[in-house]
Image (cartoon, rainbow, N blue to C red; front, top):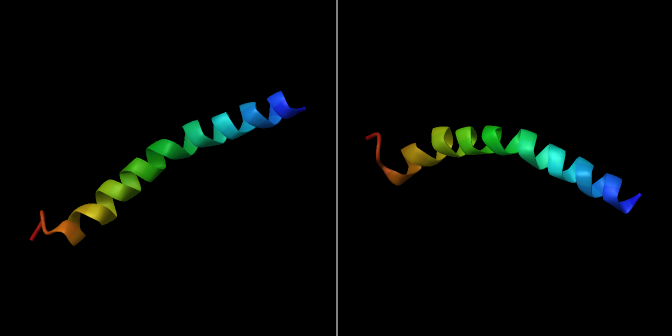
Length: 36
């Protein structure tokens, strides 16, 4: 049971990580003043 939960957590992290990186690049850059 615990291995299945760990596998599901890993799957969720792997699927959400690219979106998180894209979100950070989109909303994190203007605040640091790179675009202005």
